[in-house]
Image 1 (spheres, rainbow, N blue to C red):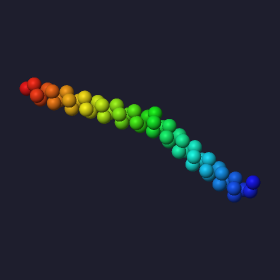
Image 2 (cartoon, rainbow, N blue to C red):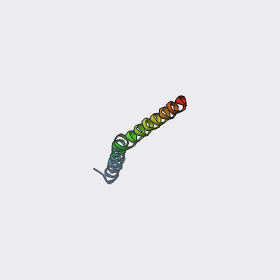
Image 3 (cartoon, rainbow, N blue to C red):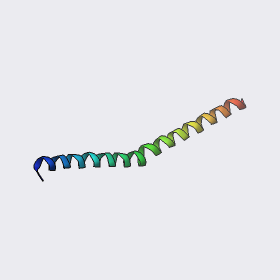
Image 4 (cartoon, rainbow, N blue to C red):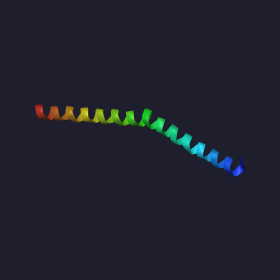
Length: 55
């Protein structure tokens, strides 16, 4: 294996690994945070609508 091929392989592995860990990060942190925030906001809006309706 030549040096150029080896460096290309290292670049490929680096990019592939970065993409893999970014996917893991998105699925374990960003998506649950987004879902939880959305649910809390909807709950808050329903609570405010119910309070406004009862007045």
